[in-house]
Length: 123
Image 1 (spheres, helix red, strand yellow):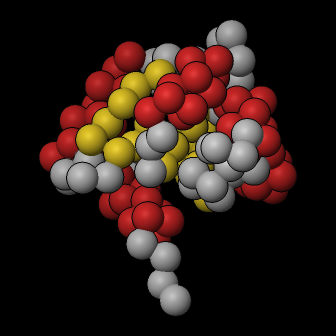
Image 2: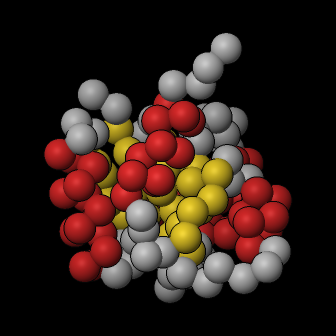
């Protein structure tokens, strides 16, 4: 069973996405802010991280930079999730170390395709 760390400060979004992912067979671990995400990524070693980019305490941009800077967690794929789909946000997320980028509200089938392709790379 693949383990996904869901980093989301909005309880409704977190609950909805957790349930949908669990129904697809994933084990979901939650973090409420970027600081918690960095800590949980290191201790739980998830297979993939879904990172909300706009959070209190430590935002997703900085949390991703810290996760990718740590040799123990650097290889964990990170998908940026943001409601602020502005020009340049995708490039900013990739520059911060994210492996993929998706917008909110989440279109679950599209997100699931991205999760699947990162967890099962072809080649």
